[in-house]
Every structure is written in structure tokens, then in C-alpha cells.
Length: 483
Image (cartoon, rainbow, N blue to C red; front, top):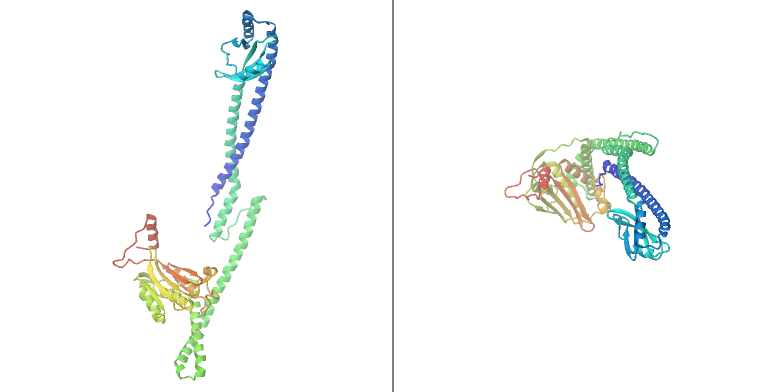
């Protein structure tokens, strides 16, 4: 059975997909913007610091050669102009402000000692600092300028937070818009699903509203055309089936009167067979057989017409299955050809219909299974059953779904003198009794027809009941009528 698809699930998936696409797009745009701004701001800060360092190195060159008083005066001068520097003389660093005295990285120091103007960003006590260093022209002393980038990083943090909040807002808006669009888009699908379900339940007049000229409008229009064609086809088939049923009933009724006369005449002819000359006896016997077959066919057609008209009723009474089966076999002369297994079983059912089912199943097995026919009567935890097994040639798999159709013959393995109505009548009677008939067959190994009937009578004294394994099974047994 195909799994049922809920429109709400598909709507949720479309909304989630819309949010994911919008989130990825907005996130990529926000991240790219942030990285571009960050790179630009940091590059601008670096270039400005390098230019200022070159200018201040020229000012520091005026104090060369440096001694202790000049070094202190140089540091004081830079500090008064809000420039924080570190003077390194003889591998000893002296800061102009002890609050801006980060450790100088070895790789930066190595580049400066080689005569390069170099820079590196360091973390100084939770601050974002940019160190730019070089040798003082005309001296081996090194001068490192310390620039604070806290304001830049603060602005970048604010930008990041703004972009993050904007991204969240975009997600929320995408969720609202996506849900609205998904609902609007899938509403026609939901209506089409309900319309298809209504048609499956038999409401053939169901139609979809055609709104607009888009794909959904064309879809609704095509659905309506299909529904109209299907309604017309089913109506035509129903009319044809009704005509066929009326024809069957009319033919059966019309044949009944002349057939009654033929049966009476055949009975008289049967009584005089022994006094007929040998050359006339065989044609008379064939005539009697043909009249008997014709009578059986008309009786079956009459029974089928009563099923179609819904006039068949069920008269329930306690029925012992094994004695009824024995009576069926004896009445038809089959008691020496059929093996019977099973134990006593009492059902509240219609005796005449059960007899009809058993006779049809056993007769079918004898016709196609020869003398190796076995009937088993029993019950399982769900229902009573009667199994009819034969050792005939078997039935090809492709014929099994059609065995209970009217006038169907599984030729050649099930071809015979029957009308093709026996199994169909057996199935109709089984359904009236609340049961079913199952069939299994293997080529070369025979066939099994299993009549399943609900058990509505209490067990005989001394018989046990198999306890259900769970509450679910107990409920299932009660629903099937087992006590």
C-alpha cells in the first residue's frame, strides 16, 4: 500500500528549503561584506601606521648618536605627541609608556635587525595593537611604534553584530514568506488530492476550480477533463453491466419454462432406457446428460441474477461442518473418492449456502484433481477453515487472480465441462457468510482452496483456546467473532 503524503509535510519542506536558501544567500553576502570591510580597515590602519613611522624615524635621526639623556628625551617627545614607542638599544627595550609595552615578537625583531621596516599585530593585555618597527637611520638602535587598533576592532564587532542581527531577521522574514508562498503554491495540490480521494470514493461529479491561466490552472482544467471522461466511461460501463445482468436474468427466466418441460421429458426418457434398443440408448443418454448440464447452467444463472439483484439472505442456524460435509459427499456419490480430516466444528451459519460452497469446491477438485482429493476441517486462532486439496496439474500463476470471476476458465489446465460459474458462486456465498476463499497452487503439485469462516459458536466442552499474545490480538479475535 502506498504511503500517504500529507500536504502539510510538503509545505513544511518547501518553507524550510526557502529559509535555507535565503539563509545561505544572506549569510554568504554578510560574511563577504564583513571580510571585505575588515580587510580594508586593517589595510588602511597598516598603511597609515607605516607612513607615520617613516616620518617619525626621520625626526628620531636628529638625536643620533643616542646616549642615555637623548634617549630619554626622545621617548618623552614622542609620548607628548601621543605616540607610544619602544626604543631598543643593546637588546634592551625601553617603552615611552609602560601601558603600551607588549613583547616584541622574534620574527618582527629579526626583520628589523636586517634593516627592514616591518609590522605585526599583537595582543597586549586584551588590546589590539599594531607594532611597526625599523632601525633609526644612521644608528643600530631600533625604534618600535605601538598603534592601538581597539577602535577599529570595536567598529568591526559592531558591524558583525549588525550583520548577524540582519541575517536573523532575513531568516525570520524568509520563514514567513516561504510558509505563505508554500501554502499558496500547494493549496491547489491539496484541493487536487481531496478531489482525487473523493473520486476514489465514488463521487464522480467532483471537479476542481480553474483559477488563472498558469500551470495550476491548466492542471485543474486537465483534471476536470479527465474526471468528465472517467465519469462518462464508468457510467457507460455501469449501464453495460446493468444490461448484462438484466440479460442474464431474462435469459435464465425465459429458459426456465421450456427447460422444466425438457427435464420432465428427460426423466421419462431415463425411465425407459432399459427398454430402448441399443442403437438408440446412447443418443438418449447423451441427451439426458445435456439436459442435466443445461438445467445446472440455468440454476447457476438464476443464482447469479439473485446475487446481482441483492435478494439473497442468510438464515443462520447451528451447523456441524463434518456431518454436513459427509452428507454432501454421499448425496453426490463422492464419499469413496474424497478423504476427510478434522474434528467436530459447529458454526452459526446458513446450512444451504455452506453446502453449496462445499459442493462447488469439492466438485471442482474432483474434476481437475482426479481421485487424490482431501478435505480438512479445522480452526486456528482467527477463524474456522475448510481446506480442499487436490493433486492435479496445478494452475498457472497468471490465472490465480481471475479464478473467481464469472465464466472464467484457466485453459488448458482448468478447462472442463463446467460453466465457469461454480467458483464465482462459491465466493459470493462465502462473502454472504462473512468469510472468504483463498487459493494456492503450484504447477505439477496440485491446488488448495481454503474456505475461511468466522467462528460465532462457543467451543465444545474440553476444547481449549489459544491465548492471544497481546491486547491487539485479543481485540482482533473479538472483531472476528471468536469467543
